[in-house]
Length: 283
Image (cartoon, rainbow, N blue to C red; front, side, top):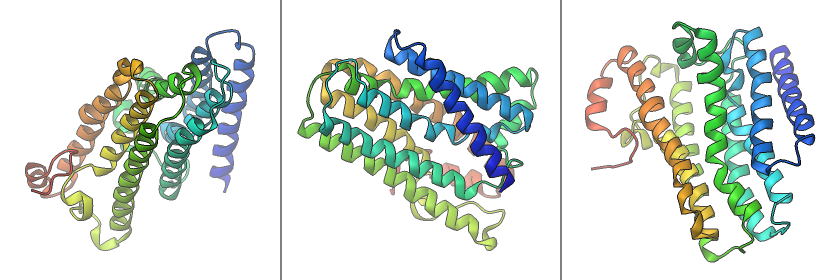
């Protein structure tokens, strides 16, 4: 309970600091205000993670921060037009994604001593404090902020109404979340069985993809972009937003997980040879 209390207080403090700071910046471009608030909250979390020597303090920030950001651009749009149908179709997948991902983190969290192995590896190198600040805290914030950029254009800048294509792309985005949720549930159940200690999952979706949970995450961000261009095709250039997220998972996150499993899990090399990194392909 003590760890949860500390964690909650720090997150509340970070959001209050961001809100107060942004209230003095409302004369600026709306997304610049969002970015500044996002970074201020991140600095608060970095300070806390330094005090408790645990960079996993920032893990749920990935899924929590987008919710108030999307609410802000939805109900205080620059266009001054409140389109509740369009807002509803964006909020459903974003809220679904945020609450699900946060719940998935919470059920695995073991307290303030529980730190992601990737953070430990990164901080074991030279200039660990700078790596902690920029690679573990600032970079994910900028990545999420960039990936949410299509929401700003679709809900705040654009005055176009919802169409059937927005309904379809919103459904696609929800399906991506269900894919991620299913993969995470299968992994959670596998790890919960003590008989599987030291083994790696090769059943369910994991039989056809080494990282089906990350595939769902990537498809969610592409879904956000598809929702945006379904509102207006002139925002096509925002494809760089989900693309950068795609590249981060493909080139870094998945690779780090594979490297760790190769060292710790017998037979993982054979599994890699016959199983795609992301794409679910049963043949």
